[in-house]
Amino acid sequence: MISPEVDMDYKVKDVTKVMEDFAPLSLQEKWDNSGLCIGSPEDSVSSVLLGLDCTPELVDEAVECGADMIVTHHPLIFSGLKKISEDDMVGSAVVKAIKAGISIYSAHTSADKVLAGVSGAMAARLGLTDVRILDEDGEGTGLGVVGELPEPLTAAQAVELVKERFSLKVVKASRPVDGLISRVAMCGGSGGSLIGTARAAGAQLYISGDISYHNFFTPEGFMLMDIGHYESEIEIVDILFSLIKKNFPTFAVRITRNKQSNPIFYY
Image 1 (cartoon, rainbow, N blue to C red):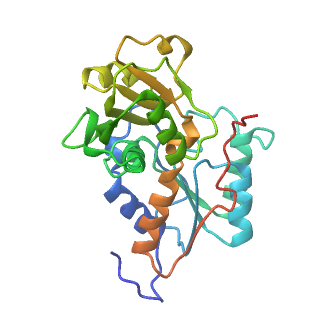
Image 2 (cartoon, rainbow, N blue to C red; image 1 turned 120 degrees about the vertical axis):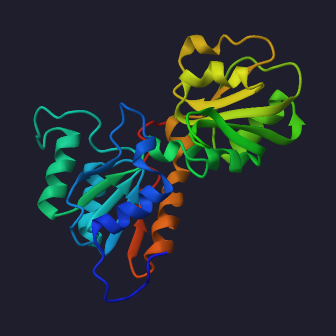
């Protein structure tokens, strides 16, 4: 924990160090763009606003509440920008942040690949035991998790448990398995690529988001649930908030007032 000296001039690099001690940038996928995308490590910071996505509205909120740094899960800039225009959603957020002198940092797949991150939080919601990384790429790091339910459940019971623990009105699922479900694999965000890995790990149920249509033709004894990209990842905002609040107790650390900012609506 960083010493809570009231008169200390914290810098962006102090915040990013705490973030990267938790979720090292070296873990991120090659296609990702986690890290500091706007601002200098030497910029001063005294207030942080957190959200899942860095939208123009989130930047406006940061200006309104006096935050000089924004931390999100999803990167504001995913790929190279050919132009920066306020007519474009990303461009608008970039322009607003630069004009206001607000630094922007994201912990995306870096936070996906630590056990205490996105997928680990999903496992905790279901109360899984003996949790381990599903697709390990290092010593205890990688994408997704797999673990055991406290007690075996029928498919119908598993659906109700998932809806309750993730506060879902609806859930997309493949045909229910006939037997009991005891081992569950999970991956926050878009986890379609790990379906085969979940089956190989002996999971009877795999829970993720953004699963495409044809994957729902599942083999006997294996079931899929798509709970939504946003729904599977939103808890990371609370995790990052707690991390910053613990290490910078003199900060005004806030979670966006529009935390329920899912761009997908269900009717």
